[in-house]
Structure formats: C-alpha cells, structure tokens
Image (cartoon, rainbow over all chains, first blue to last red; front, side, top):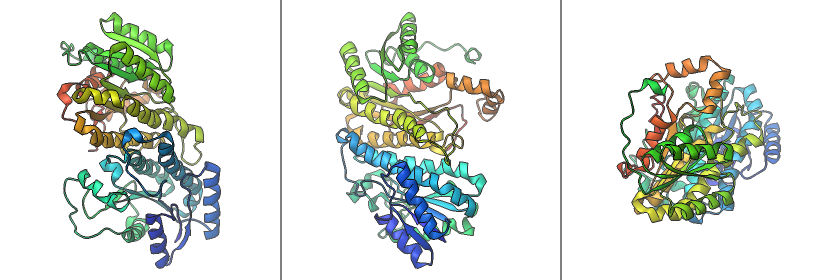
Length: 218
Length: 266
C-alpha cells in the first residue's frame, strides 16, 4: 500500500508509520498541522508523487502535540487558534489535496484522535472541541466521498495516551476499561490495516475505539 | 403550521428576574427562543448583527408585554461580544443565560474537493470562535449566577451524523457539542449547566430552501415521525426555556435534539 501519514512526528503518527512500514507498505511521513492551505497542498502533493500514488491517507496529529491542562477562562485566542485552526485546517486541506488521488485508487482515509472529543474533557476544552470536529468531519467526508468508492473511518484511542495528566481522564468514564492492561500506540497500525482491507469494504463513517472497552457510547 | 396545534397553555413564569442574551435573535430560531424566554419572564437581549432585524424583534417582544432590548453585535468580534455582555449587565444587573445561536455560511452547499478558505473561515468564526468567546466572556457572570447559570449552544443533528451536502458545517457543530460537554464538566461544581439544542424549525433559511426546492418540505416531513417542521417559538423556544429553567438544573453536557424525531442517533 502507498500510505501518507500526517502528524508523523507525533506519537500516534510515528507508531503508524513504523507499524505499516514493518508490514511492507510504502509510507511517506509528513507534518501538515498548523500549515497554510498552499503549504499543506504542496507537502501532500510531493509526498504522493514520491509514492507514485495514494491508497491510504492517515490523518493524525495536532498542535501543540503535548496537551497541557488549562482552565477554560485562561485559554487565549492564540492557544485556541493553534489547536483549533491548526488541526482542523491541516486536516481539511490535506483531505482536499488527497481526494483526486484517492478517487483513482478507490482509497481509504483514516483519522486518528483520542476519545476526549466524545467524552468532553475538563481543562482540555479546546482540544476536545477539535477532536470531535475531526471525527464528524470524517463522517461528512465518508458521506460525500462514498460514491467515489473512497471509505473514510476514524480510530479513537484512550485519552490517557495523549493527555498531559493521564489520571485526568478517569472521571470521564462510567467504569474502568473492560480489558485490563496498558494501552499502546502500537495497537493502532493493525486496526488501520484491517479498516483498509477488503474485509472492511462496507465499513465507512465509523469510529473504532481502541481503549480497552472503556468508552462504550452509544 | 402553528395553527394546527391545540392552543398553547398559559406559560409558566420560570425565568422571572433572569437575563438572557440570545445571539442571532433577529429572526428564526433565535427570535423564537428569545420570544419564549421573554414570555416566561426573562429580560432578553436580542444580539443581532443588523439593527434592521434586531430592533423590530425587541419591539415585538415589548409590544407583547415582555422585557427586551436589542444590542447590535457582530459575533465574529471578541470586542463586540464583550461590549454586548457589559451593556447587558449594566442594563439588567446581571446575566444568567447565554445562548449562542447565530451562524453564517450554513446554507451554501459545498464539496470538500474544492471548498474555499472563506467557507471554512465563516463557519469556524461564527459557530466555534463565537461559542468560545461567548462562553469565556459570559463565564464570570454565569458563575456568579451559580445554580441559575446557563450556557446553551445551538448545534445540529449534522454535527452528530455528518452532512453530505454541508461537510464543513458538520465539524463546527460537532465542536460545539464537545465544548459544551467539557464546560459542563468544568463548571458543574458551581451549579452552572451547559447544554446544546439541535433544532429543525421553520426559519427564513429553511423557507428559502423550500422555495428553491418545492419537494424538500414534503420529503423532510415524510422522514419526520411527527410529520411537521418545528415552530421556532412553541417547539424550539419551549426547549430552550426548559433548559434555562430550574426544571433542568440536573441536566448538563447534553444535546437535546428537537426535530420531531427525524434524528434518533443516541
């Protein structure tokens, strides 16, 4: 598979690059978070050209990569712009540039984010809003690109993988994870491979949550 | 559509002595909510971009015996939201209920493959940035109001399920839901509640859509279990008044879909 991974300098993206590379995919690792539309387009076009086409686009990463807690009243416009505009526009223009290539390959888009957007997160309000927006843009893209035989799905990881204070996420859940044991970013690439495989040919617009069976809504 | 309902019973007076700001209240769902809040006794601030719609809206509420003023506000400006909140508190003595309803750019069908920067910017600024600014600027007043403090963000079923025709409308409406959940968690210990309403109602925007596509009304009604399009005052306004009242003091972080049963996603 020819794969472009954005946010590849961050933990989740890097794990996907390593995982897919290890199973034989040709992977181009890029960073489009926080970039302008023309910069994003140039970066993505270059990466796709280096692969000779695109089968899978993996969208991951946000800015700043290290999410630090902040009382809502203390979030500045600059803070908000960094995570909201940086992440959303990075995703939007990446997707836009990739669409013509994905039409040719009948390819797949996978978007990665933590569960914080679904749960809501005290002291991470701007990040939570951004993650849920990414997830629902994924659904809208699935609806609009489905007729071109492009599938779009999301993988949500447990918030404790990305929040500065992992214990902060405990209060968001009704119960501990169903499956005990540590989460790992290394779990993500196998799910990507499943989603884009022929086994997933009728799967689109979905969010696969790999958090040990913790966020179980709806 | 309204005349098909049985006569509306006498309104309860659950919001006497409270003050509400409703953005985008010059028309449509915003005006419907402002009208019903006023009917329940609230002082209402019509925060409208244009005095041509905002002033008549406030005058209409006053003529019906309610308490309302118009403060012309461009909600894409942090300074103007700050000024609106300051003037509200000066005029009425406090702010208990902040409702951000306004949005622009929601009616223009677009495709992801060629959508322009401007479409994103309009939706992002009116839906998300304005929610952020309304919440942050109202925050000290809502906290002072304690168990009477309310933040209500108007979202859409499209912000849950994703829209085929308005793909960029979906994420901005989703961001509002997650913001509401996060603030519900953050402000809950003060008794302040934060919720969303996802309405479908007869509005100027929908009327325009029906005019350009006569089949749309029938199609939408046919998919709606209650077989009609919502009324801004009696349907959406009633839901807003409920969430604003003490009757909803134990409801927070939720999205109330008020669309006749069209969307049943939860």
